[in-house]
Structure formats: structure tokens, C-alpha cells
Image 1 (tube, rainbow, N blue to C red):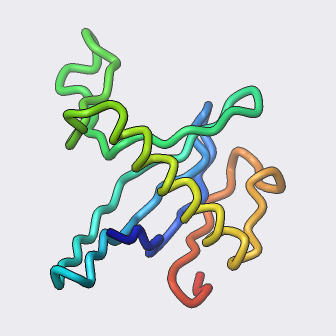
Image 2 (image 1 turned 135 degrees about the horizontal axis):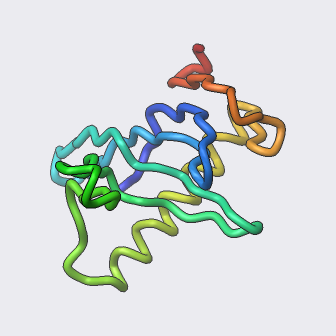
Length: 116
């Protein structure tokens, strides 16, 4: 199964660096799935990816975002996220996007073909 980055939207807030929309593609089984809402985070030189989430239903009592989807197997989750990070790095290098050059108020969309 291939992971294709469809879009990355820069958006900096706390550890959040942006939003990732991806396509899961399995040519062998003629399968494609579009999934928006993955997030890229960074802190102290460490980067990580989170699965799509939803805001808390009662933000006064709970600040925790709920996961829209998750993995049964944490080893497979780690492998998937590593593959996703590699695909994102490739996408960003092709788009000439450098996250360190952004500021906390930026919000730039990069889609397929480098359109903004």
C-alpha cells in the first residue's frame, strides 16, 4: 500500500506544524482512500504525526481530543507513521517547503502540483 500526500497545510500553534491530507493507494487491489486530518507536530527537535481527531464534546471538563480512527497494533502504527513521515518529507522537499521558515501566524496551503 502506498501513502501519497495530497495536501499539506502549514498551521503553527503550540506543537502543531500543519495538517496532512493523504491518499492510501493499493494498485494491486484497485483501492484508494482519501483521509484528511492527520497532523504534524514538532517540539525540541522531535517530530511526530497524529491520526485525525475530533474536539472534546465538553471542553470545560475535558481538553483531550478524541481519535477518529486508531490502530489495533502499536507496532503497525509506528511503521505506518514512519512511512507517512517519509512521504511527507519527500512531498515537502518537492514543494520547497521549509517548516523552520514559517511563523506562528502562517497558514499556507500546498496541494498537488504546488498550487496555493
